[in-house]
Length: 288
Image 1: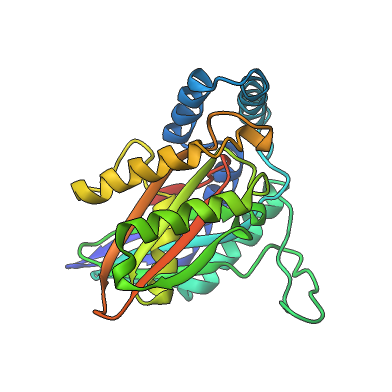
Image 2: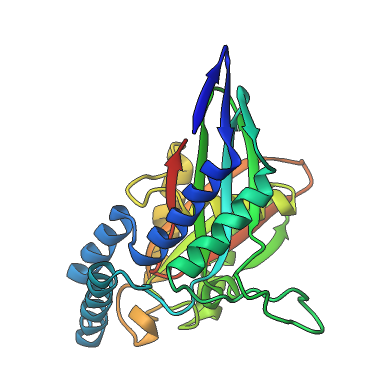
């Protein structure tokens, strides 16, 4: 329930929980239309017969998952949630973090989604049993709305991500080399064709955050900065020259898109993060 009190909008924690539960299921069952469009385009451009067969099987898998309402992939990911909260929003009936994690518990149980999260990352590594806790990124925006974006991130691709701090003199060529080398080292592991998110600038944690955000940017859009957009195109060409191909079986399409996000940085550094996403680029959003 959403209630208006003057300029302040009250949104119940229960409403957030229900929205997150629905988004968890939707994201794991259906890919966004821009991703499907890029896969279809790549299938037409693929030159290898085995690569074409892989694309055919990818599309068949997507159709079955949507029709039968079952997960696209057995790895239903660690849930990353981006929350954009309008400064005029007041959450009632519970804490935001609790509401989100409760929604994941409900959604993963209701959707028959695999629980993959362990409570101790080093020693015991006992499964939490409900795919929580989530990784939650919160930002304050103007207005009286909450935007929730749920991103179930599989670790076949997450494990292939890399972070470095280049010298400022390395420039665009250094960035290009680092990104292409990262994809080359990853090989077939991230289940290509991949979506390559790149974060440049800020500090090391900011670059990593940008690279994750880049993965959920529409694949129909380039960076609004013409120089960065051109760099995206150049890196994509170089990646597809690697010949890794769909699912690593060799071919002309190794990546569907390279999305770069940038932020101002210090005069002495050039942080660069690469977050690789497999073709199962799952994310779903809602505005409350």
